[in-house]
Length: 184
Image (cartoon, rainbow, N blue to C red; front, side, top):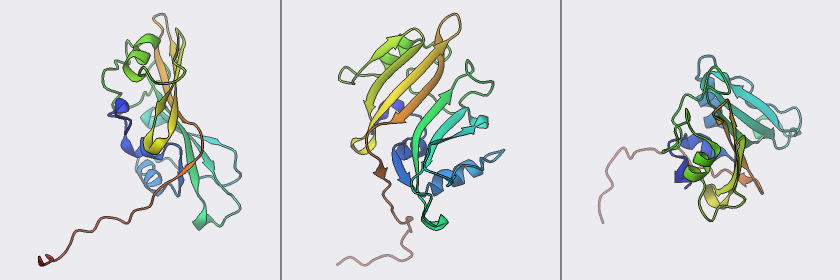
């Protein structure tokens, strides 16, 4: 598990680079005020942008096969962008990775907190930082951050899938046992 991004929401991180019906993500975003309505678009296979302004979050999604009937369509989550107050009036409302103070974080700070020695392609310029990190289940994610203002502090942090899509595993909902099972 990519613990370095804790406490970013597990639901978002586990969907990155995966394709599925995206029902849990859909339900969570529809519950917001105002609700996010255009999450699952099935017009074509081009990636498309969905902004969740009230959370300071952007998603990049893709319909995997728009020729399938609606009940069979699958969507992949390409990227997540978390905004700071340098980027939007309404910044990301959740927690940021531990050790990262977004009000003062420079490119060098982000790389020091989130990149590790064996991460690939660490690039830290005053306006941008890019590096690859391990994601869930053998995936690799690209981290791309932008910086601005006079102090060149964090504006956005984007996590992008790389490589092949991974199918989301399906597990039935947990049902507690209604009666005790006798021991053998």
